Image (tube, rainbow, N blue to C red):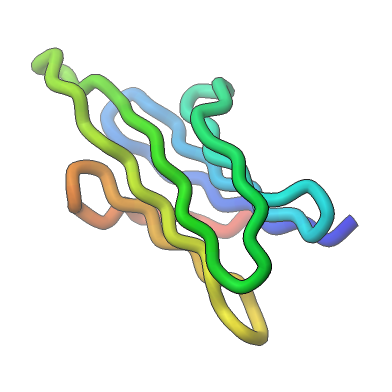
Length: 86
């Protein structure tokens, strides 16, 4: 199975994005599934975290590309550094 995986951190949260050819894309926060979709060329995933002040922060993920898949994760409209694992 063709699979790509990215992992990043926001405060005490681990954000993981998984993209597979046959099972779609998924967003995981601290190993809990928050969104799952099936996209052919691009996909948008959404989730949330609660920051250290107790405020809800929205997560937005954009996956896309033509020859290789790129992953961009935003928490409260700020880019989170993601490291490709696979």
